[in-house]
Length: 310
Ligand code: GLV
Image (cartoon, rainbow, N blue to C red; front, side):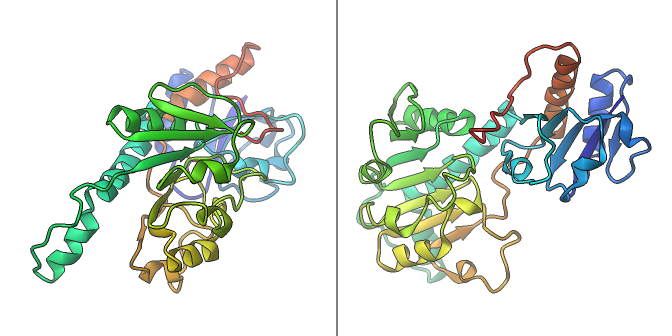
């Protein structure tokens, strides 16, 4: 029996080698589209897979995302019913995301862009405040958001978090949907970070209506999904002064089209969906472990609740 890797945006030969080694060479790992025996395939590892492709494997039982997000799997209308879905939760993915977020937060806090702009003109000038006072709101307190909010708190930042269900994170004032509205939450912060999963309920959650509840001159960091952000709404909120600066790693359309207004916007910092990328060696361990667990009828690691969408 075998595992297939259907990953269309990067080379996964390293992943293939590591999964095969983890499973001691007993299970062939094939890279799509070279699949000698589709009927052998029991597990698929996917990222940006072509539509309907999973239908080609009559004995497929298990699908793993190659990343933290799984909406690309759940949005596949041809997804066979009853498939079990897992994702990657890995310390190196979390660390890498944490470092990106810290880099952005510290840049904002220490106003690096102010100095960079001054340097262009050879201007020696201190800002009115050497450090901007930040009240940081983390949207989403899962494996990534929860751990990063705790790190921000441990650096001495005032950190608040908002999630669907109640959470308890040391140093973080956690609010949840049952006790506080999102508008009430963002009113209390001047830097909003989005690390939500993409689901039908979270699409477009970062919109003008939300931004106008934030204090004027606020900041935004979106490292979750482009679909969370209403792009026109951000531009309007920036024009009206609600949002002063936005750090964006993810976009509705990727690569971000050349003519997109974000590129030239003086208040927007763009990175190309590079905040945190799955480490293939670590992912191979989780994928192989889940394959073994599934074979032995054991509980799977990081299994996704198809109804909740994460
Ligand atoms: C990356 O975007 C991921 O979901 O891991």
